[in-house]
Image 1 (cartoon, protein in one colour):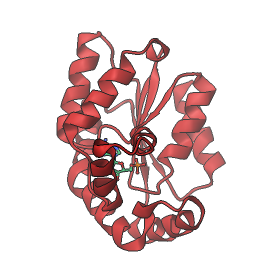
Image 2: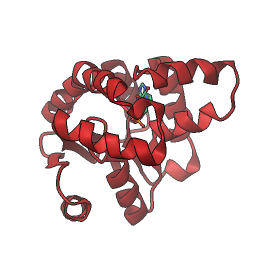
Image 3: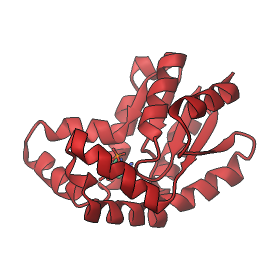
Length: 188
Ligand code: AMP
């Protein structure tokens, strides 16, 4: 099972990706979490990463593609994996296709969680108080949402055309449990 989660910031990708990866017993690869862990190293690269991430911009494709390549080559990913936050640009999507094709693998399910801008701002505002992420500040959220619309949203159309039967859209403003059950239904 190879799954991709798409959706704007705050749509619930991380939550749903974590639940389904646990249920299927396959790794949850969140590039946001991997990058935030990298920031702890506090070296010169992590300082650059922090600057980019805190301003709501995207980290370079080269860095992301290397992270994904390294993770996908691990034994624990051999039975499948859940991608959350990757691919985010067309360059990353092409890179992922290349890796999957080389290994004769195909995407099983692509899930898009949709959410409107007003709800995104409200939701992330509450998350800011709990997780204290710099990039959850209101002015940064706007940049992140714009990046999503410009760079990532076009990928949803690309995947929808490539995998019409395995592409599913769920409304991200529903109860976590309801979305979770709807996802279970399509992976069974
Ligand atoms: P997330 O936790 O998925 O919202 O990601 C947090 C931040 O990490 C993003 O705003 C980007 O700065 C960076 N990031 C995560 N995944 C990617 C990616 N696939 N491409 C570029 N930047 C990324």
